[in-house]
Image 1 (cartoon, rainbow, N blue to C red):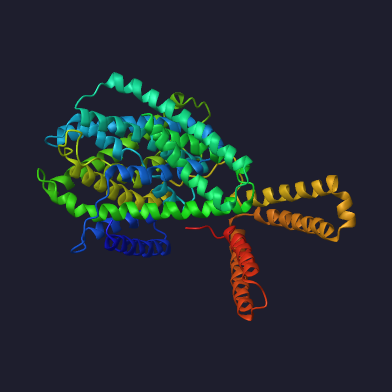
Image 2: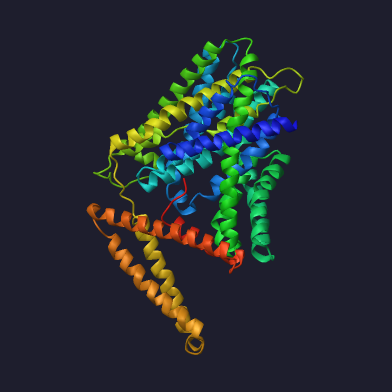
Length: 536
């Protein structure tokens, strides 16, 4: 690639980061700003086109995005809500893909059913990043967040499998539903097998070899690519390989990361990587949009926008109706619990139905559509497929993303979770961990407590911290009028941490302490602050 193009992409990426800072300030979901930035880039006069191989986009972007989503999925909660997740991730994806296939093939002149199914597979999966970035500023029941996260993880896999089958149908010109169904289960099952096999190999390497934090982070970066490439090499589902392998390693993460440094470094590396990947995908669509519009010889831009708006509206309606209908058919989910009188079923269904924003996975899939068929001819209607996908993402992200907070406030859903509030959970966990440590000292290290002043001091400190944690837990069990006191307490802590950082800066200028020790103390302050100041 031309160095000037690289500089251009870096400059645009910097501009996107500035926009995301604005989104953070305004407390608006940052994927909304990303899609608007992609649209804005396409209007920059003289913007050059950056050519990237479509298959390379699929390979570079999707494995890490899927792996990161799997890594942060709670297996226990995922399994608890597996039935609604499954009905959304498989049933809704296949229904959406089928309806979009019939609609687009009858609406768009020259658009075949196979092309419609391809488009349906691309736009059917909602984006968890978009939904989570909106919901993190709002209060909804934990089960809804779990269902949305689990759905996004699995429907990425199911929709991408649909996409692959439809792509083969377009390239070959033939499609057999019965053969595709049988192949679907084979490639899915074998993809899972390969993903779990490679995950076990990585588990052994992490667990039993002398890794360092840097090696641990690097291994997690190459793992999804190993899983994806090996599965695809044998013509099985690389997507399911990444998802299954990611879930396994995530569930075993407490074993494979021997030190806290490994865990923290890996988390930071992945947070940065996924953040940059999200920005890059929307920059790529912005750079390609002018050429895409020029290549639509058979359709005008007005017609393309019309098709995109109609398909966007249909996908929104399909999701809302599907979720509402299946919420009132509990036997289909195998749920026999009584309805919560405080939260009628329509409330949760409305939130889940409206949180169907499309995002980066759909865009990466559209950009990965090949330019040429196997016979050397141009891929039919490729530009239209990409433009319609972008319009669907634009409509769902901006319209639904901006109105989702209002929908949540309108339904007034109450959190009836089995879990305590987050801060109470944190305090209770801390108490148990400190009591466990005190018990261990008394049972196994009693002599060291008596003979070693440092160990004795450790026990006294743990006992003191346990008392403080119990007092904090008691203070958290208060009504809404007392919550302001907790916020005030957090503001005091943040102010203290800011002053401590200033003092460390003075120490660095005095040159009486090593930079290494000062950085260590800075990290400790950062960890303490992270407990009360969540990252955007």
